[in-house]
Each structure stands twice: as structure tokens, then as C-alpha cells.
Length: 579
Image (cartoon, rainbow, N blue to C red; front, side, top):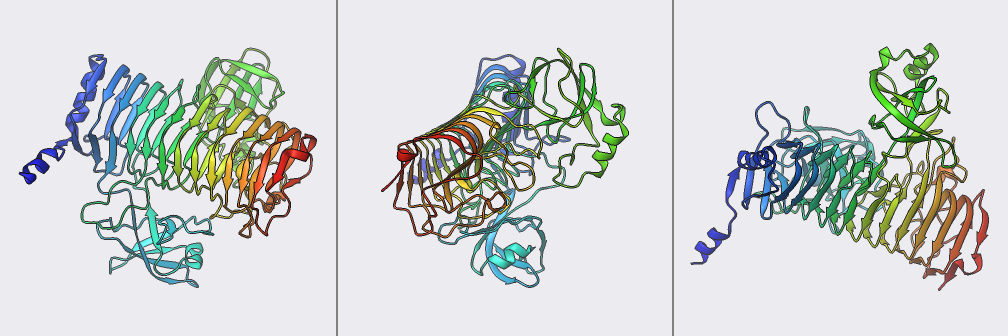
């Protein structure tokens, strides 16, 4: 009787083609709702295709997929929605077999030669993946003090052990450590679930168990999406395995970029992503040619500017409206020889780097262009402004990364690199966020790994803008910054770091058990005192009220340190009460 009941309870396995057919029929027939029968839908993309399920042009459709699991058998994108409007997808779970990453135990190493040997756990693919992470055996999480580890090389040895050549890893790891390894298959399409040029898509109770790159990505279009109760977290052990998964994704859990209206992410669970936990991305555009009301723009990212968008270079600078746009090849853009030379000769990580060789955007403005060749601008309408990140549970070692105007509220964030508001544009790239609010969040054990001397993101909460050489930008990169009612506990280094802002409000924050561990050198390039509880630089009109410092450790330099360029500070007397 029991066996019969168990057999009835087991979800049926179905071919992925059935799921594809149901969705395509719903889109073609303009159905208002489609119910996917529960079950495990397993399969690969159709012949000649590189996405398992692809939907284009769906409108006003509700997809009910409770009890439905997609198991993708190729290391390429699972589900792509393109140019879809007013679509709701609920209940779907996505996984991969084989997994797009692997893991094991470190069995040998050679520090001088710079390699580690990884015995792959039973049930996980034996593959020479190169993205390496070192995890503590007890916590099954990134090890404290772990360095950045990039540019690995890997090989499968005759005994089935994967040897990873990485001097940083070999210099830090210990025999017995757990190792996760991520990789990338040639010709694969990145990410698990994507929304491209979509408007008002709701993902409700959608779960991503694995990804070759990022879990959920929304890029371009009107935006206004909602991610409600979604989960990006490690799935169950693969068949035959006894060890739990260490990773959910090879890169970010959730990322949005170049949206007209920012996404609402609420009640989600994000765990063990390979890079940032959640990010809202934007970029700048460099003027390569100017002719009257026409500008030829280059970007290191997407050419997302649309007619009707507004361009700006600084918060208090002029705004220009785009009347028309055209994508052109650089070779046909008629650039001046000196501009072509700058593009060809740009060194890595310099202002002109990665701008040449591809397509440019020719835009026509409503009035004569106020910018010259070499100037940088940003698009006020394609940054994801108006985003909300609220009531989420995050246990993931990457950042909560913000490059737009919006709200981060009431989240529980455990062991992150930090919550970072940072334009990430190469100086003197244009940067300007009018308002950011970070309130009511609980952040524990930030910055306990990946020390980074060259980063300005030295606080559990950081709002910073990198300037020329080793400096931070003057006030004006950010408008009103409100950081209030947050609880920051433990971790490594400063609790709150703010630079380059006008009208800063730090109110009602509790900083608990800071500076019990000697801080790393993160922020050293910018002369940030990461022994402080709060550090400010280049800020105008600062209000401090009702912040508490509770049980600080011996490494505290001062509760509040004012760096260069801080003006008009109100409330210093009660701004940080030590208890």
C-alpha cells in the first residue's frame, strides 16, 4: 500500500517538447491562461536551437506551472522571454542535468607551483572548470579571508582528479577544503531565465536551482517587472550524490539592466550565488563624434538609448532629449583619426578601453548637443530607476549592487561582500544618482572574504564613486542618500562608508560588534579608514541622528571619522551613541 502511495505521489516525467508546445500554443492562440500539468519536463533545445524554451511576443498571459520542473540537459539557457508584455509565470522550478558546475574536496596542493588537486564528489560531473571557490568544510560557505581568484587553468588528470592552476588558491587553500568549480561551454547561451525587451512580467514563486552564468536576468525594454517569492538557491544533490550542492549559479543570482522602470524584488530567497547576489546595472556612453544635434555614442555595454530618452552628464548639468536613434558600424561613423587612435591604443581599465571595434549609436537630439567629443553621459531613462528590493533573505557572498535610483528595505543579508551603491564607470565617466534609500535591513558578517585594496566598497553599506587615480569624486555624484534603521553586526571593517554625496542622512542605525577582527586592507587605495564604524568623505549637508555603536572591538579607530571634503555636518553630538 505504501509503495503504491509513493508511486502515485512521484511526479510524472514528460518530454520537454510537451511544455514547449503548451506554451507556444498559448501564445499563438492569445490565450489568457495556460495550466501546465505537474511533472518533470526533461530535454534539450530543439535541433539547431540554443535555448531550451523560447517565447516571443506573449501578451496578457498567465502561465500556471505549480509542481512543474524543467530539467535542462544542455549547458545553455533554459527559458527566454523576448518582447513579452503583461505575462505572469508562477510555480516553475528549473534545474540542469548534468549540472553546469561541479565540486569536490581538495586532496593535494603545491604552493610553489601554484596548483590544487580536487577530487570530485560522487555524482557531480568530472570536468575541468576554471572558476574556483574555496569553502569551509563546516559552514559550506566561502572561507574567511579568501582572496580574489581569477584566471585559473584546469585539467582532468588520468586518475579523474581535476587539477586547477591558480597561485592565489594554492597559496590560501588547505587539504580537506571544499572546492566549487564553475565553467562555460563553448557556444552556450548564458543565464537560466531571461526577460529581454519585456514589459510588466511577473515571476511568482519561480525557483532556479542552477545556472551556467546568472539565474534571472531582465534586460532592456519598458521593465516594471515583479519578482515575488522567487528562489535562487542550490538544488538537491544529483542522483547518486551524498554531498549537498555548494553553488546555485556561476555568477549573479538576479540582475536587471537598462530597464525603463526598475523591477520590484520582494520576498525572494537568494543563496550561494557565484558572484553578486542581486544587482541593478547601468552604464555610461562616450561621445565619439559630434555634429550639430547629432552625437555618435559608444558603450562598453548595451546600446540601450531609445527615442524619447533623456541624456545627462551630472546631476546638476543640462538634460538633452533624444528624438531619434540609429545603430551604425564604427567603420562607417566617420570618426576623427585622433579618436580612432585613442580607441586602438587604449590600455585595459582606462577610459577609452573596450569602446572600439563594434557598433555605435547615432542619436539626434532636440537641441544642439551640450557635450564634446570624449565627454561621457548617462541615460536617465534606461537605468532601472524606481526599483524596489524588499523583504528578501540573502545568504550569498556577492554584493547587493545598486547603480540606479530606488529602495533597499527590510532585507536580511548574511555574509555578503556588502551592500554597494557604486556607478562602476571608469573615470571621468558620467555618474549621477538623484536619490537612494537603504533602510531597515539586517546585515551580518560583511566583508569577511575577498579583501580588495583597490575597491572603495569598504563598508557593510557603501555609497562611493571612484575618481581620478587614488581619489574619490567630489560631492555631486549622488543626490539625497538616506541610510536609516539598519542593523549591521560583526564582519570585517567599517559599518558605513559614504562619499561623493550631497544631502546624506544617517539615522537610527545600530552598529553591533564591529572591529573585533583586524580589518583587511579594502579601501586602502582611497585612504578609507576601515577601522572606523562610520567613515565619510566629500559629502555636503550631512545629518547624523540616533545611531548606536554597540560593543565595539579593540580595532576601532573612532566611532565616526570624517575624511576630506566633508561639509555642513549636523547632529554630530548625538549622531553615534556608544553603548
